[in-house]
Amino acid sequence: MQEILDTLGHLGVVPVVEIEWADDAVPLGKALIAGGLPCAEITFRTSAAEEAIRRIAFELPQVVIGAGTVLSVEQAEKAVAAGARYIVSPGFDPKIVDWCLARSVPVTPGVATPTEINMALDKGLNILKFFPAEALGGLKMLKALAAPYGGVKFIPTGGINSKNLADYLSLPAVHACGGSWLVTSKLISAGEFAEITRLAEEARAIVRQVRGEQ
Image 1 (cartoon, rainbow, N blue to C red):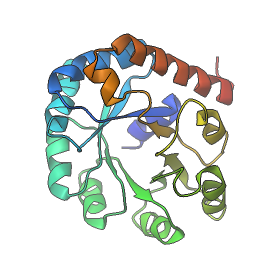
Image 2 (image 1 turned 180 degrees about the vertical axis):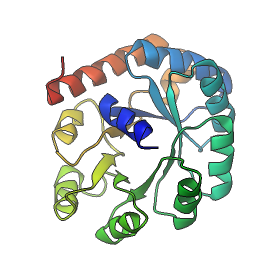
Image 3 (image 1 turned 90 degrees about the horizontal axis):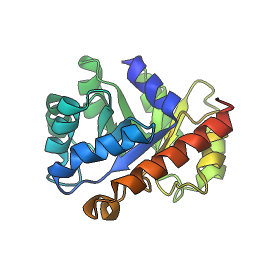
């Protein structure tokens, strides 16, 4: 279970994807692989999400594929059955967390307050989504929130882009960053997969620069 989250941490950026057509899933996955970013969080905001996860999981097993915007245990069940290897929820739902933990499925619930962090810690979770990052106060808020929780790592998501990615990654408490700027619905629908590859390469370059990787 920890291996999946460790991989996301190593990559440093998780593309958050809202996909309208399942036929675009495999070309998208290939574009991310080409950009050195073989991971994606397919959000359950569209009817194509489940099938998109299934196609990527089957045809591109090297992509660490997860399901985002999971709002119920039923959605978590569908996502994992389709091949999702981790679950992300926008808030802390103990039912979803318990379901995932009982099945050794990595889960990163969203938190925005110390109370929610305490609830997550009580479940044994220490890698959490900080959402919506910029709307909650961005770097200043995250620094303050992380200060009392030395053993907790965060995946800030919401309002992050190529301009502020390095600032977030510079925080010791940041495990990785989630971002939809890499794979917008507009880029997917226009078939601009080469641009998605370019944005993925740019993001990975920022990660390597901030972390001093070769």
